[in-house]
Image (tube, rainbow, N blue to C red; front, side):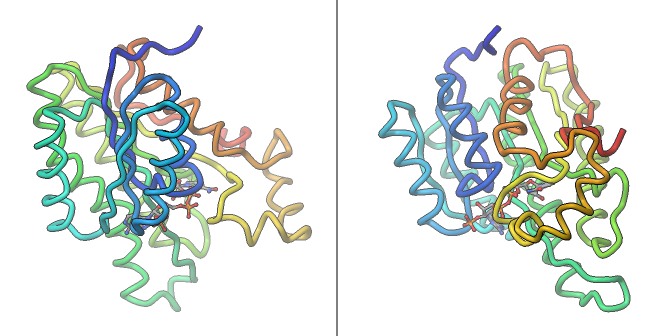
Length: 250
Ligand code: NAP
């Protein structure tokens, strides 16, 4: 069964590469108009151009999601063109790994700002029209690191765990308006973020010892879960965390 979408509009952050690109492409293939957000104009522009060339509908928007003022301005621009963004996917993220004693204040705040505060800002600006429309989907891309913790990722694990708490709260606040909020928590997925481990035979063998399915995930594995959660069929699912990790965090 293919997921059903009734001419919806989505905004996907971090859509210039990796998981966000796959999410944008999958939603667009299902007839969703997609606003592709990334930090650099070239990456979101290339993804939007490719979607449009393939017959889909997309726009590009370059904005630093860690900057609350920039997100507010971007959201205002978007809402002038589209009265409601039906589907919000907060996917933009970075890592700045290091053991706690060596982690700088900047590495802490950059990761919290890009992964977690960005979510707060986009939700704050785009959820009100969803609640008025009495239909909406918020999908936040966290990580198994936010569920299990991960040595060397105090900043990232805290940000991703924070996204889970934020999402569960929004699920409760917006449920009466039929706006759902869920988290997808990927394990190790092959993207630019993980190239260093995936291409190192020794490191990847060690990681895969902890993955029952014995392979790294593909960006499409995450995009398929997001597409389902964004569809009409997922209307009775809210406040949940879905791990897509080859069985690692079970
Ligand atoms: P990626 O390949 O590194 O791509 C990250 C995307 O986020 C890029 O499009 C980048 O924009 C955008 N971005 C980063 N900082 C931004 C900012 N300040 N403002 C706007 N856009 C920004 O990452 P990925 O592997 O696809 O990861 C996507 C999400 O999944 C992240 O939240 C990550 O934490 C999560 N995740 C990934 C894995 C994994 O194994 N890959 C596992 C668990 C969770 P530019 O294109 O302009 O640089």
